[in-house]
Structure formats: C-alpha cells, structure tokens
Amino acid sequence: MSGLKINWDALGITTSLACAIHCALLPLFLSTLPLFGVNIIHNLSFELGMIALAFCIGSYSLYHGYKKHHHSLKPLFIFSFGMILLFTKQILHEWEIWFLIPAVICIVSAHVMNYKSCRVHNHAHTDDCDH
Image (tube, rainbow, N blue to C red; front, side, top):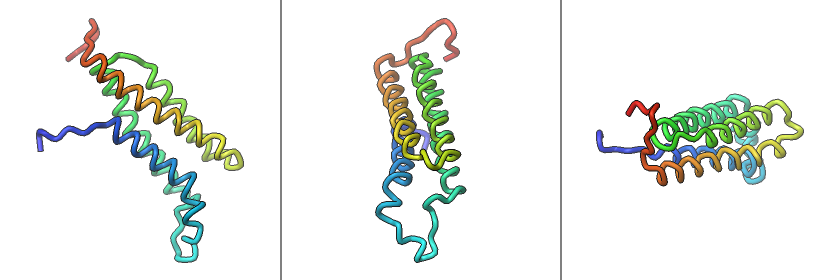
C-alpha cells in the first residue's frame, strides 16, 4: 500500500466534472427520480456534500502542487474563484446555470494548470522550500 500514489489533480478534475454532470445533466435525464422516492436533484445536503468534496480534494491537490512543486498561486486563485461561484450558485438559484458553467471551467482549469505546472517544474525549489 505504501507504493500507491494518488493523482490528486485527476481526482479533483473527476469530482468537479461529476458535480457538473450532476448539476447540469441529471435534471434532464433523471427527472423521474422523485417518482421512485429518490431526490438528489436540488437536494441541499447532496449539493453541499458535492461542493465540500470538490473543495477538500481540490484544496489538498492545489496546496500540494504549490508547496512541493511549482510555487505558483495562480491555480489556487482560479480554484478559489470557481468555488465562490459554486457557493453563489446555491444562493442565487434563478441564476444557477450562469454560475455553474464558469465555476466548473475555473475549477477544472485550475486542476489542469496545477497538473501541468507540477510536471514542468518537477520540484522547482526556492529558498522557502522545506523539502
């Protein structure tokens, strides 16, 4: 088990895309779920859980990339902006799609940027590194 390495950026991209699919496509394809007693469409607990999962995985992934590899705050700022848009989507339901699309674009872009920066710099050390 010690040799198992998790690609946190890939996991972050996957959870962000899963959230986007849930928010954008699920209502179109699975609108009959309430007939069967299943309610994950606009279920506040489920929505907040998905946002929390994306936040936890994304924060860890991007912080790790920042601290151990590229030392660039740009992916963290883009990710943070995307997360703010996701939280705003929960408050302003009538504008939900207008916040969801740029939120997902920002979050996925931050993970892709982090992934590429980690591969290019490959442990770019500076004076403030503690590794």
